[in-house]
Length: 330
Image 1 (cartoon, rainbow, N blue to C red):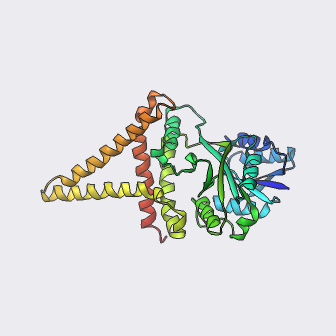
Image 2: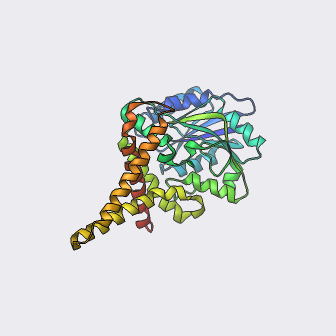
Image 3: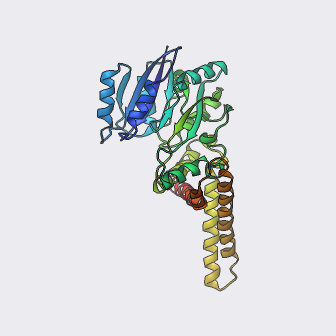
């Protein structure tokens, strides 16, 4: 039996050695492994690096993804895969040596169609910005307790970086190629709707690399929020309330600020400006509270900046959703 690793890549020369090494070092006894690196026509040295590995290892293949987007890479990989099972693994993560074997074992033991390991968010750098991004994405306040980064062991509504039976994906028509983001949420929900079970095991883990700069974090948040709106129209059941909390936060800010301006122009009271200020104050206070809680896990004075990072990340995310709803027809 074969498990086919499918990994979308694009301009990954800084990470690709580590990624491929992580795949090659997988320890397994129940199956063979093939590695399909689906490249979105990289313009750096990524393709040359993959080709050099493919010349050394017969189980590594470079697959072209001319449309570049992630769901196209998944579907091309699924069609090219020789395995009965596929592992959808990201290029920015590093995996325990038992990752494939443990996920496969738990998939069989729990009668699930897909199984993933525990996801550990860990920055590749120790710069101030990189650590702030890591801490923000490790916090329940930052990303909610339902995030794949904080997933508990057991049956679940979502699996990221899963080992999954290929036939199930094919029977559902593959990943939704209209979704540049959230295609995994969409597929997870479609698998559940088809009567399958999903499972997360803590018998293995992978290390997820968050954005390394605040600018990239806020752009990541904006794009995530934007595609939440698109995903809502494409498949409502795949989206949950926690995906839209930043949207409600931004709507509250915009509404109270706008009404505050109207009040000011009309020479009325400052009720809505006060309400706007309270929303900002309580968000920063909540951010400070969760920053303080996180000190017991990792004490670092640089966390004093976290409340402001939370605020800007949530605003970027929520603003993305606002824009996505406004532009949904496009």
